[in-house]
Image (cartoon, rainbow, N blue to C red; front, side, top):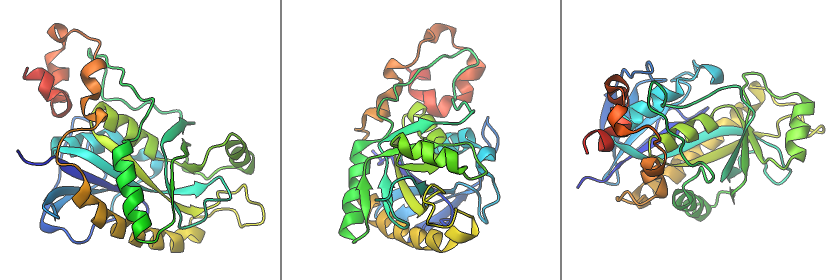
Length: 287
């Protein structure tokens, strides 16, 4: 049996993954619209890998405009069952300095958005108490540490709407609540990956101290470019070492997330909704 594919979602400054052989490009239309960009495929260490630039090549899509459902649906339709996200974040704690990497274990939602594949006659409530694959997170930590990068295992990513950066009052409040990093994109990806039964981990790449650290300049897009480029180079090195170690079996609890999540009786699923979600619900539809 072919090993499940691996998905990489690249963030600010990371628009491609080097070292892929047998390159392919996939322009996928989904029931939720078009993904952020073409999905790039290839082989790395005998594993099938698909790379998606979150904001599109050239950084064309604002955080609140991202087609998260289309992105995850498209990756799942290609057989992706493991995803590593690389995402730029601001630090809310002194110990997380620019160019450090935080591997969050938790999320806190400060957005006004809802992200789900379900509805239209099929109800599901996936368990999300532990949103990160601990096994995948551990692989990233081990390989990043072996390369000499500074990684922090665990922590909470607070997700804001954006696209504006935080006010000082917001930044200070988030910091005092004990949150570790702040970003605008990653929680939606984690939620939808869980619904799609994809094991998921995040590399949160620190670019700045948000704006709570008054002795530093407040964060601006221009000010973080240098850190973005350094972070992208670091992420590529880590990913090249992690991908060969990702299990070839569907052994993560996330891979069976829908076993206890689907509330609507299979007998009354609307056919149209079922087909719309076939990449996600195929094992139930074909049972």
